[in-house]
Image (cartoon, rainbow, N blue to C red; front, side):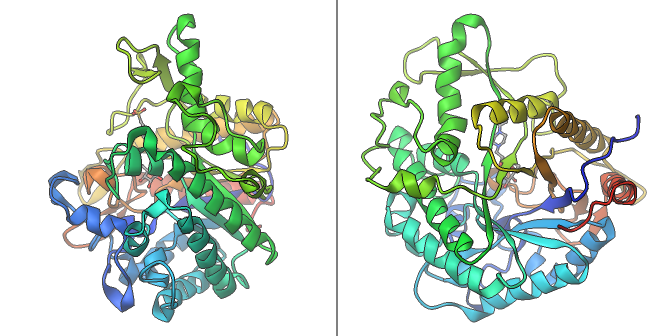
Length: 449
Ligand code: GBH
C-alpha cells in the first residue's frame, strides 16, 4: 500500500460508540428503562435472545476503555448519552448519578487529550416517553430539548461539540415503520411523523446548544443512490428522497422533498406546523455523515413500494454481507456539496465494517477491516481534494458490541471483546489505526481542535 496522503491540519481522528451497545449496567444507579431494554426482553426480537443488559460492561470498565483509546492516540471520541440514565422516565427530576457517569468519562477523555463528542440520542428513548407515543408524539421533541439543556449545562464547560440525533432515518424505518428495532412498531408509512418530530427535536436542541455557545450537528446515515438502469431513475429518486433528502433537505434547504410517491402531501402525515421548518433549518455548525455502502434501486415488479433494492454485484462484501464500495463515500460527499450550497463542515461520524476475525495464538487478525478503513480514508481524502470540507473521521467502532437485532454476532470493533469474560484484545486494525494517527499527527500540525 502506498502511504496515506496527509489530511488537513486539525483533522479529528476518532472512534464512535453508542450507549446501549456498550454500557450494560441497565439497572445501575437509578437508570430507567429505555425502549431497547423492553424490546430486547421480548421474545423473538434479537438474534439468539441476546440483550444489552451487560453489553461490554463499559459502565464499569470505562477507565480501561479510555486507556485503550489513549493508546490509539485519538483526538476525538464520539459516544452517546443514555437519556434514561439522566431522566429515568424521560422528563422530570434529574438523576445525578447518571450525569456523574458522563462527567467522569469526559474528564477521563480530556486528561488524555481526547475531545469528547457526545450524541444525545442513539435510539434508546426512555420507555416512559414511548408509553406516551414516543416520536409519534410531538411532545417528545420538547422533552428532547429539555434533556439537551440539562446535558449542555452539566458538560458544556468542557464539551464544545455535540451531536443531536443518530440516524433518524434508521430509527423511523426500523423502529417505527418495520419494527425490526425498538420500539418495534409496524406503522409503515404512517411512521412519517416520527421523521418530523425527530427533526423538530434536532432543531430545538440545536438552538439550545448554540444559545450556550456550543456547536451542534446531526449524524445522518447517508447512501449514494443509483438507478440499476436508466429506466429506474424515478424509483431511485423516490428512494433518495426517503433515505437522504427527508432528513437533509429540511435542515439545509428549509423544505421537505417530494414525498408524493409515498402518498404524502408534504405535511408528513399532518405533523408539520407553521414555523417548524424555520426551527429545523437553524444552521448547524457541522454535518455528521455515517457511511457504510451505496444503494442500487430499480422499479419494483409488483405494485406497493415505489422502489425495490437491487443487489450490487462484482464488489467484495463484509461479514454482514454489505457491499464494499469506498468510492461511494467520495461520490456522496461531492454530491452533497453540490446539492447543499450552504453545507457546513462535514465529519464522518461512522464508517466501518463487520469482520469475522481470525484468532491466532491469542492475537486477533482483521486484515479485511484494515483494507476497508484504508480505502474509505483515501476516498475521503479524494473528496477533500475535490473541495469538500471534511474535518474529521470517527470509525465505527471501538469495541465488538451489541449489534442491535444481530445481538453479539456481528463484530465491528478495533478491539475484540470476549463476551463471556469481557477481556479486551486489540486487533491488527487497532495497531494499524494507532500508527496511522501517529504518522498523520507527526506530519501535519493536526491535533485536538
Ligand atoms: C449504524 O447504523 C448505527 O448507527 C450503529 O449503531 C450500528 O452499530 C452500525 O451502524 C453498524 O450496523 O442492505 O447491504 O445495503 C447503520 C445503518 C443500515 C447501514 C443498513 C447499512 C444496509 C446495508 N445501516 N445498511 S445493505
